[in-house]
Amino acid sequence: MAADPTGTCLTLDDGRPAVRFSRIYAHPVARVWQFVTDADELAHWFPSRAEIQLRPGGAIKFSGDPHMEDSTGRVIALAEPRHLSFAWGGDELHFDLEPLGEKRTRLTLTNVLSAADTAARNAAGWDVCLAALDARAHGRGLEGPQWKELYQAYVDAGVPSGAPVPGMD
Image 1 (cartoon, helix red, strand yellow):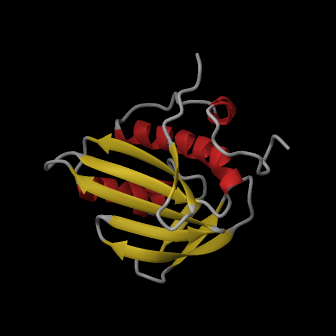
Image 2 (cartoon, rainbow, N blue to C red; image 1 turned 90 degrees about the horizontal axis):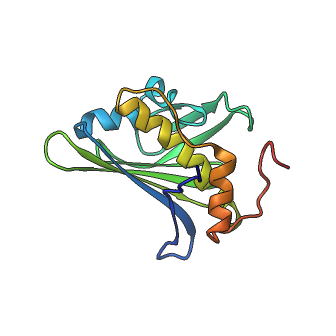
């Protein structure tokens, strides 16, 4: 079965490259907010353990990712429970939540990239992570896509690539 990439590669109005994903969950905004801000919830799907001080300028501790050293980031913007953005490495992550009635929420994740050639690598990674979040949100086990197949699908689709890939270089 071929991998089915779900991300979109784009250039933001300010010229920075980004990849964007959108998901709809049958949960109210408050629950989806927990998925993206609570360290114990993030542990089910985010690539690193992330402990976030939820305030503008707040520190974030990232740990436990086998492909990168422990690091810190900072909260760039916060409008609880609708928006969180933070710096991680040279990238920015933006989480936007939009209520769709009382019990459904659209989550949009935008990864603003420090370099365009990381787009395919990061998009494949977020596809895998969001598959784990989808499984968590829908109360089922993870039978998500494989990273290498997704990465190749993004490359085949012409998404910028070439950045080092942990485990493949």
